Amino acid sequence: MEFKHKDIIALRDLSKEEIELLISTAENMREVNSRDIKKVPTLRGKTIINLFYESSTRTRTSFEIAGKRLSADTVNIAPSNSSATKGETLADTALNLLAMKPDIIVMRHAVSGSHYFLSKKVGCSIINAGDGAHEHPSQGLLDMLTIKDKFGRLDGLKVAMVGDITHSRVARSDIQGLTKMGSSIFLAGPPTMMPPGVERLGNVTVCGTMKEAIQDADVVIMLRIQQERQGKTLMPNTREYSRYFGLNPENLKLAKPDAMVMHPGPINRGVEMSSYVVDGSQSHVLKQVENGVAVRMAMLYHVCGGELE
Amino acid sequence: MAGETTKTVILDNSGIRRALTRISHEILEKNKGLSDVVLVGIQSGGAYLAREISLCMEIIEGERVPVGSIDITLYRDDIKQQAPHKSVGKTDISFSLEGKRVVLVDDVLFTGRTIRAALDALMDHGRPCCIQLAVLIDRGHRELPIRADFVGRNVPTSLKENVEVTFDDKQQPVEVVLEK
Image (tube, rainbow over all chains, first blue to last red; front, side, top):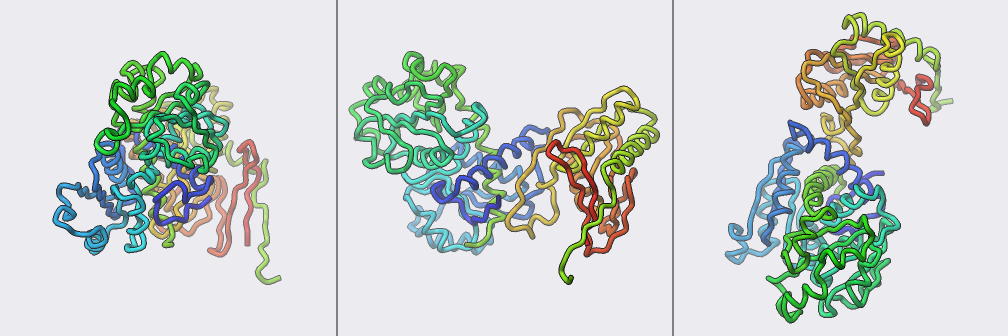
C-alpha cells in the first residue's frame, strides 16, 4: 500500500487502506517515543510551520514534538502573533510563509474548508489540525489507534458518541474513519446539537437518549461542550446538560463491562464527564494524547513522501 | 529471449543451513562463547536469519542468545528520493545494548547503505561494546567502507543482477536466487 497524497485534510478523502497504513505506521513510530533517544533523522532538513489561528495546547504541542522527533525544524505561529490580527488574508499569509520554503504547513483554522482553499494556493503539503466544524483528521486517527490498542481491531465495534455533534470536527473525523473501518456509530446529544441528515455519513444511528446510545457500547466517546462558541445558546445550562448527557459511573454501567471511555479534550469536568470517570480505570484519555504524537509523526512522514496532486 | 529474466538457485535450503551453522560457529569462536553476545536482525530477511542463527547457537552451546530486530526505514539516506515513502516496519529490541557485543545480521550485503542506517539506528538504542556484521550473501558493489565479519557465501555479481533470499510462510529460509 502506498500513500500518494500531498495533503491530509480530511479522513473523508482517504481510503480504508490509506487509513490502515497511517495507523500501522503510527503503531511502529511509537517505538521511537519509548526510547532514551527519542529522535530519528527521517525528516532532517525539512521545515514545518504550525500555523494555528485558534488556541491549542494538545494538538499544536503534539505536532511540534512529532516534527522534532523526526528531526524536522518546526516553527509555531499563534493567533496572537500572526499578521492576521493586522488584517492580512489567509492566502497572503500562506504565500508569504511559502516564500520561506516550508515543506509542510500544519494549520488550524476556524473556517471549515479553509485547508482545501490553501492547498490550491501553495505547493507545500498541508495538514489539517482542525478546520471549523469540518474535520480533525489527526484526532480521528489517534482515536482509532487507541481503540485498536484495546480491541486489536476496529470492525464490528459499537461506538457511542455523545455531545455537540453539530459543531464537532472530531465527531466528523471519527465518523468518517470508524465507519470506513467497519464500526457502528451511535450518536446522542441535545436535538439542538444534532445535525440533520447525519445518518447519511455511513453506518450511523441517531439515538433519542444517551442511554440508548451507550447501551452495550464497546467505546464511549464524549465530546466537549464548546462554551466559547455555540454552547451557551444551544442548551439551557451546563447542569441540565450534565444531567441528560453527562457520563458518570452509573450510566457507564450500561456500556459493556470492558468499554473504553474517550474524550478529545480539554474536558469540562463535571459537565461532559464526572471526575470519577475521567480518572477511572476505563478512561483512555491520556492514552489518546500519547498516541497523538505517534499518529502525527506518521502523518508528517507520509505527506513528505506524497506526490504533488 | 531479450528482456526475459533467468533465475539461478545459488543456495538451496540445505546450503543455507550449512552456511548459518558455520556463521554460528564463527561468531562463537570470535567472541569466545556467548558472553554478552546479542543478535539484531535487520527487518525483514535479516531478522528471520538472526532467529535461525540463535537456534544454531543454542544447539551448539546449549544457551539462548537474546535476539532483536531493527527496522531501518526511518534512517535511510535516500528518503528524499522516495515517493511515496516506504511503510515503517517494527523495531523490537527488548534488551539493553549497553556494553553488549552486537552481531548485526542481514540477508544480502550490497552497497552498505542499509548497514550504515542500521549502525545509526543501533547507536540510538545504546552504546554497545562492539558491533559485528553477519550476512548470508555478500554480492559486492560497496559504496561505503563497510565489510562483513561473517559471510555465508560471496557471490560476485554485476549491477544488472539481483540476489534474493526467499522465505516461506513460517519465515524459514527457502533458497537464494540470482536473477539475471
